[in-house]
Amino acid sequence: MHCGFLCRFLWLWPYLFCLEALPIHKVQYDTKTLIKTIVTRINDISHTSISSKQRITGLDFIPGLHPVLTLSGMDQILAIYQQILTSLPSGSVTQISNDLDNLRDLLHMLASSKSCPFPQARALKTLEDLDGVLEASLYSAEVVVLSRLQGSLQDMLQELDFSPEC
Image (cartoon, rainbow, N blue to C red; front, side, top):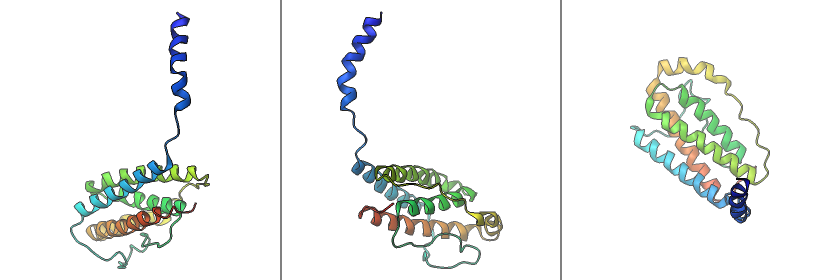
């Protein structure tokens, strides 16, 4: 009885040594593909296009464009957007929020491949005031969040071409 188990284990032994970690270029490719998918989802949802630089009172805490991003900076920005999206009552942003979680996992994998220390994303303190802003202008808040998220994602996509720092 033990011989059968041992024989199967010995038969699999060469395959166990041939297993390699997921190549980093594959993770980077998957990260870029997921970013493009999220941008497409935002385009499908967005009805109105506004400038990501436009300022709307009460929504100043939403991240704008950041020209040079590090992996930890990207994660922090995505964490903020994820917190905001989960606060929006619209069901149309649920999948985008889930995609952001997956994107953050991919960024963690990229960071660990570079042996980067990856701090936990800080909680956004101003989210306590978000409910009041959402009650006052729900549609505007969603449009601004999605527009700025789209701009941030496009910046991240460009930064990933240059292999960003930790």
